[in-house]
Image 1 (cartoon, rainbow, N blue to C red):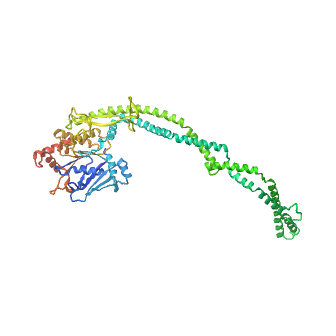
Image 2 (image 1 turned 90 degrees about the vertical axis):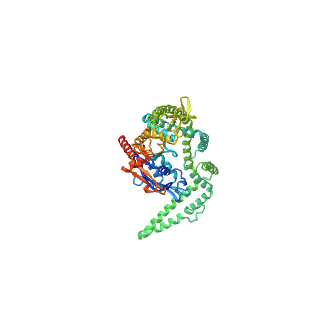
Image 3 (image 1 turned 180 degrees about the vertical axis):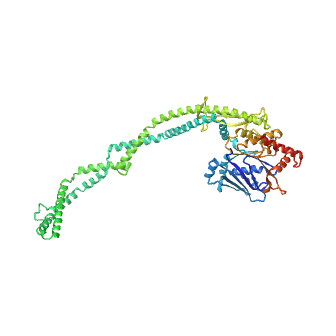
Length: 580
């Protein structure tokens, strides 16, 4: 199932191309044309759309800038669509519009889904959209991380099951290790914090403050500090209300009010209004008597003892020492003590927690070692099968003596996990580093595929790899340049056949000069120059019917009208269709 395709590209003022539109097939598209006609500009253009380096030398002479625009169908929810949305881009009817502009002065601009974005965003999308295999631009499976991921997908459940178990254990180990590190690296700080808490709690416990006590003591201190003035005022007020025993002739409020009440009582029956006033004066008399009594009691009960005042002030001073350190009032001090006690319990439990975490970490590391070993064994078994399959593919691609192996190795790390007596580095995907190696001929040492093959050989190796990996690698589009360099005849037919096979599960675009390859394509594009040496809009044609036979004839014999070449071209097309 094709997960997304490059539908078309428009190229303007890039190299020999003046203005051309390249329409691509969802399956296998072959790009052909005379040497120097601009076929490789397809690869260059795609590289620019995917964040490749902008070289001002690519701008067509006389033009101010070169522009490449692409339309890529991206299913909603695909990784590329999600990343594009994060960059502010929007899909246009299910497609992502990408453009890249290079000025003749070297400036470069990128747009994604109608939004200007950094070129780096296009590079991030590249891995999820297109794998380019050519002499100058290599992506996709040349990256070791993708090689390991693709090998795991190729293996299926034999790797997926132990990998899931390993990943779960790894995540838990990471969490435990982080908590252990936090406890141990902050041990001194936590000990200091515990000491401060103990001191504060002991200081508060020694004083034993009571909620609201500071307010009560403040009121008592105020009263005791002014006891004499309060007693004098209460005595004078009492005398004014109830009279002074030492002055029997004196007039007091109680006596005057009583006299007023008696005067009205004598005549109250003659006028209801006056009777009401008499009632009210009677109430005043009762109130004056009550207040007078309370004033007498207040004066008698008032404690002017200086010893009590000293005790109150001493207690207030002790509480003030606490409120200066632990809260604005006694209530806040008590709240601090409650929180502090809870925190101290937590800190004093560190030793127990440390022992628990250490034991869990050691157990997890032991489990992780066993899971990593099982994961490695599964990968090694899969790598052997995969390498044999790729080597077999290469034998049919004019590399009969080439041998591919996969190196599954580990790196020593004193802080790693123990595997078979070695302590090796580990990560979220296990302990293995996976790398594809190629020995192009007998006696040659296996080397990383990017270094062990020429440009044409490398493309063929990558084709063999992609055919074996077909359906397991998430890249929806593959572009091959120079995949057929240095081959012909039967090997060229095999290359075409394998490209067609790969195109059943992904989009494949191939720049080729071999008719045996082009014949297998679902769509063939011809790139040709005009008389002035440029490629215009009409210079990129979709070939069908007689036009395609004519182009294959030219590729076969260099003569479009050769009856022999035409017959051979028709035979190639028929054979390719029959093979499909």
